Amino acid sequence: MERRNIAIIAHVDHGKTTLVDNLFKQSGTFRENQRTEERAMDSGDLEKERGITILAKCTSVEWEGARINIVDTPGHADFGGEVERILSMVDGVVLLVDAAEGPMPQTKFVTSKALALGLKPIVVVNKVDKPDGDPDNATDLCFDLFVSLDADEEQLDFPVLYASGRDGWCDETLDGSRENLHPLFRKIMDHVPAPAVVDKVDEPFTMLNTLLDSDNFLGRILTGRIESGRVKVNDSIKALNSVGEIVEQGRISKLLSFRGLERVPVEEAQAGDIVAIAGLQKATVADTLCAPSVSDPIASLPVDPPTLSME
Ligand code: GDP
Image (cartoon, rainbow, N blue to C red):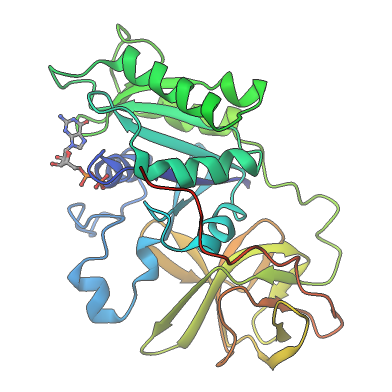
């Protein structure tokens, strides 16, 4: 199955939850009996009740036989290293901006990290149905922002889609047919590279643990993108901290993949997949989970607090 791993960067209220909900609906990801009004990226009461907040962070949609994993990014820079770790799971970003407000200073830090990692953004100018929107200006402001953040030529040549996430459509032009969100699915498939894992699948298993969560039934749950190799339920693994010390050894008791809003158990996963692993009790964020034979952690990412001012 073709895969894409993306992150969405958006200022609060620019319409991320609404857009993702409609992507779900239009991809048919919601099961018949699932309440579509459950909002995808808000950690609602239901999730809290179950002790699952991770659903809010990773979701996936299927479109024309491909799986698109969507990772939420923090909307601000409070957690220096977290932004990098989250962005290191993906191969592309969607920058969602309100047509009236344009890009906001609070998303500048996350955008700067995405550009520094070489990710090529897709800009979605949202809420173009709003009478006070100025989509062209919002697009220009994104360009200016990218220039100020030292974007390269390719990044500056970003594709733009105009959207009303609420009304469930987007288009490459402002006078397009406004039918559905398929142009965004298509743009993600065309513009975002597939995970570069061809040479890595036969290497030993490694994964940088990016998100930590706990579940009443499964205990500690470690989520990240598999960097190399394959894993199966019951495999022996260990956790290394950033200087290569063994934190813990154990077995995978449960391996979960993301399907829509749910995590579903899978038997096996491989490099490029974003998965959640249960079975370890001490391993934490920024630890490397790996096969017993591995001795080097995945190159540690900076965990210093960000220095960029928020203006
Ligand atoms: P988030 O904070 O980025 O997740 O934003 P939400 O999806 O919760 O949306 C914030 C507000 O903007 C809500 O009141 C939505 O109804 C509204 N909204 C979202 N998308 C659109 C849109 O395309 N057009 C208009 N006019 N309003 C929208």
